[in-house]
Image (cartoon, rainbow, N blue to C red; front, side):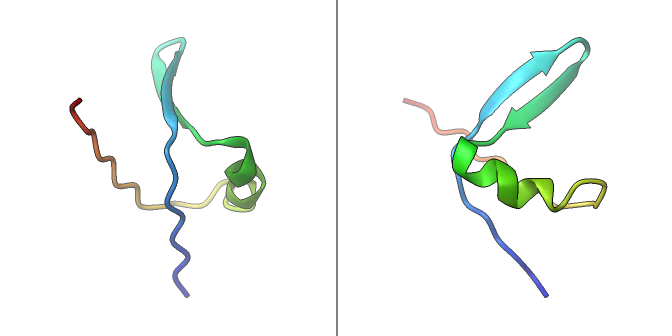
Length: 47
């Protein structure tokens, strides 16, 4: 099974790590993936 979530998130730095912070409506969905490996595609748009 494949689940694909598409959303805009923020990249935040905590200590020495960078995290992708999802919007609130995706946090519960993504919390179910805690501890699992996922594939992430990052697209940076220049303005």
